[in-house]
Length: 142
Image (cartoon, rainbow, N blue to C red; front, side, top):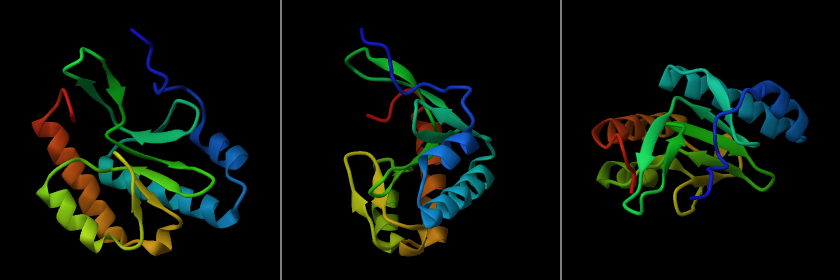
């Protein structure tokens, strides 16, 4: 079985932000997201792989047998948009997305250009819904 690429590392989150993020607004938004997600999760930020900033962790195991660890919530300040890893399936999350603001939805993440495009209290609720979902489904989000 292939080894997971996205594992927690000892790399500095702030070194990553300062070296990878070249847009000043995106850098400010990244620092704000770190502050908010740390407050909401109660966990310090950690680098997961080369470009994901994650908070906390959980273990997953798919029906296929593939398993690993992933951050409870996280984000990546990609060039085109932020990838927010805060979404889990369910009616509550679907309802919250309607109030989030301007975003695009990927398979399992939310893409936003800048924080001012979204409603931060709704983002907090999405994060808290994710915590609740993962507490009820500790081994798998599939």
